[in-house]
Image 1 (spheres, rainbow, N blue to C red):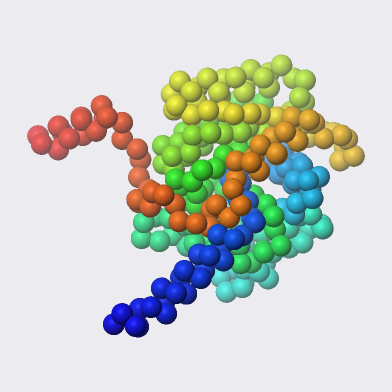
Image 2 (cartoon, rainbow, N blue to C red):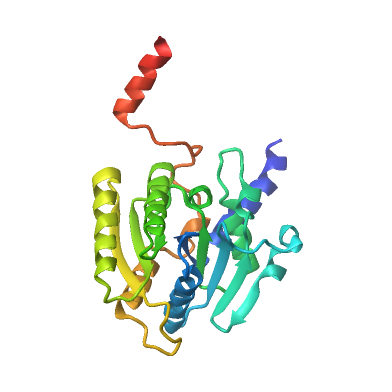
Length: 269
């Protein structure tokens, strides 16, 4: 019995070593259907990484993203499109949920992505908070919030932060906004999200940047965006998402001590 098990164990160990050696950095980006120029924000991140000589794969699994090809189930690599020498794209709406295991984790999908695009240095995981929680729970990562000056987009960004903080244990965030950098309202929005994150969630908005979606592609990249991109890379260890998480418990809402006490008393009544 032991001999029959050893080949499977050796194969699993080999896969873990292969993935641990990967140079890919996975960066979660919370999709926000209320941001009119969300695509421009993703393109700006890709451009910032391209300046550093990195190739970026955008895994687009947001609520409004294109549906994946039927071939994605059997040959994911064939569905990766090369948009430029520095950027690849994968339409992936709904794909993470096809890889959910008994613990509620969809981390297996990350291995499929790594196999499908070994040329990518950076993988932007653009998805809803619920799907990102199943992909990156209990990892040392810094998700990116997307927003603009529309109050609905700000509310949605904060709600996504709350979901990931409570469901996935992610407590440090960056914010990328689609608006002119000199707009005073942008600073107030960032301060509001930061204060709410600290006061109600114990989370931290580490940095934020603005990008004017009306500026031409030839315009200089804002220094704040360059800084944000570099900080995201430092917060995403190479191959980190392809190693087992420290906490593999099933995903469920976190229960605060007072709430847990009320639930326990209610259960005894």
